[in-house]
Image (tube, rainbow, N blue to C red):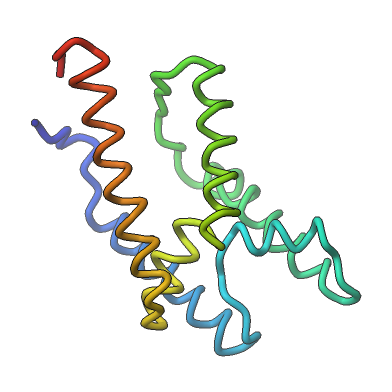
Length: 147
């Protein structure tokens, strides 16, 4: 394994993590709500009175943030090494897993663990372990041993 030192951004990544943690803390302290994207998005499909605007604004911010960032700095180059069908199937599996696990990776990993939730600890350990296994199987078993 090698590190792409040109793409290694510990300061930017650390600052991003700090901002995510701060956002999660402010959301729960100021609004009493957990900053899990699946819960915020899911709430739009089962709207309650007075509960739509903040969810919509939050999602617009998530989608609009890269556009705003692009005004000051170039967006990072991305390379997706999967077919559209693979991406669709993966997205559906993630969505299904999110519903089955009562939350997404950010909800459990950032917000749940910070609240010492045992359910979130089990969920985080489960999706991390299965992610490791999936990468190993795809790269070493299905690819015929090629790394």
